[in-house]
Length: 117
Length: 111
Image (cartoon, rainbow over all chains, first blue to last red; front, side):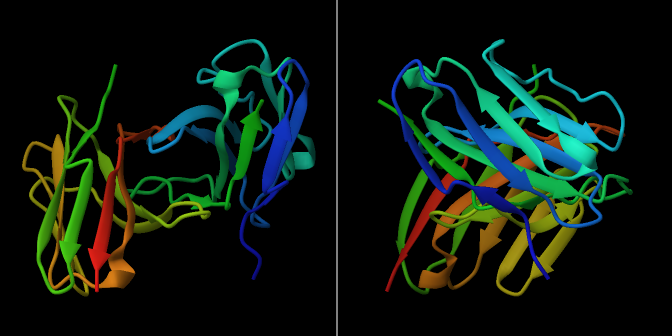
């Protein structure tokens, strides 16, 4: 069974350019998260999608960041006019979406390492 | 703002030693998870605890949730090189999908 996949695995871009990061969640998972992990740090919540509901964008650090999820499956995180402080690993996770008494079990992809030069 | 602080930040030990990692907050969580992350990979869920005082064991790993559900610990007995990685705790409030992640403990077990 396929897990969460992300592409590209590594991306080097020049400051000021736009980048798109892709996430393919586990089939059947209705919930999808994006996180950012800076070097040696924990995970910073960016955005959450659940089915056809409006996404929770409360974690997006600036209006240069946006994300969409087409057809309830694949998601794309777009960073416009990249800055050096955007350099980090961007992780995607999916879950069944319906939490239970144990909360939400998230399955993570391997991440995309973004380097802005 | 909810915060989860982990200690220690770094830990380097010899194979066979025991260790404990702590995850502390001033906030109450209804669900607290522990993950292990290896280089180049995403975090992998190890355990979820939801009841104050709860203890869960996973082979050589013992997880405890504080009575007040504000803190948690992870104890590893007889550590092995395969335990090397970044350990992350994550907490969520009741009914929410949004998890707050701790700063992580980077463990290195030397053979």
